[in-house]
Length: 290
Image (cartoon, rainbow, N blue to C red; front, side, top):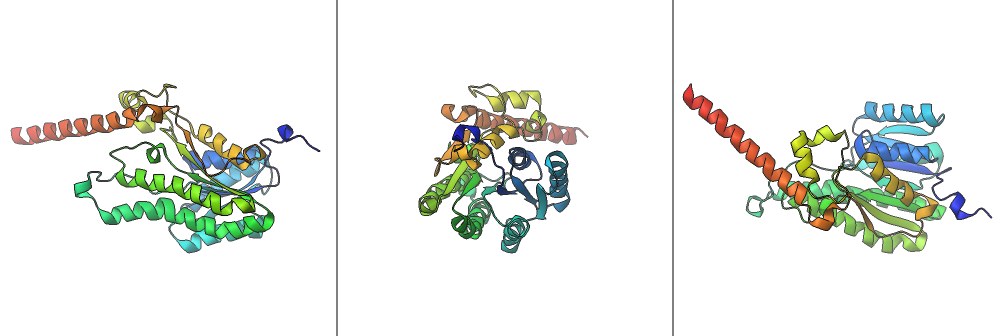
């Protein structure tokens, strides 16, 4: 018998679907799953970007290690098409990573609450992942198990006043993982969430100037932004034999930031608001002087 220690992170023979995988964290997840042996379906709303990711994986790890399927996770037929494509090509699905999300700015103050926007957060971050699980669970049950992983957020763990809809929907996603873990556990289907903190998905500059990066990092115990591969490594573990006793958990990968109340993101928002006010005032003064 092969010792488990020899195959802890071996995904050979497995098939994974990763939504929202054309860039950033999703791209890193797809590439690292392939690196450890899995076949991967890259999917997002832009087929050309997904195809580029699949081509890179095939060139690096071998022919037909990856395919690309266009998928807008808000369209039920698109989600079904991704599942069908994996089954038609490889006949099984071992891992599903729900990484696609609805993000963006919002009016956070409750008295200016927009219920339609709030509903959009839940549809994009919770309902779509629940539906994807509904589609793949019969296959996983029939083949004897699988791993479902939702990419959540540290804002679903710590309260961020500027993330009323987004953070609440991510908290709901964490709870969805817990509930589904109970439902599907008897079929050896594990359901977990991974909650990233501040991650430089496209490089540190995406978080703004050096001063903005400094403020955003704030009092993170590890003193820096995270990287996409550091999130992907947690997903690889949950998909692998090494993670087969983990289910119903939200694994926070944030450098320890939530331990100190997420002061950095709060301060960054306040800093940007103040800069915007100063810029508006400067432009108004310039107009009056004309």
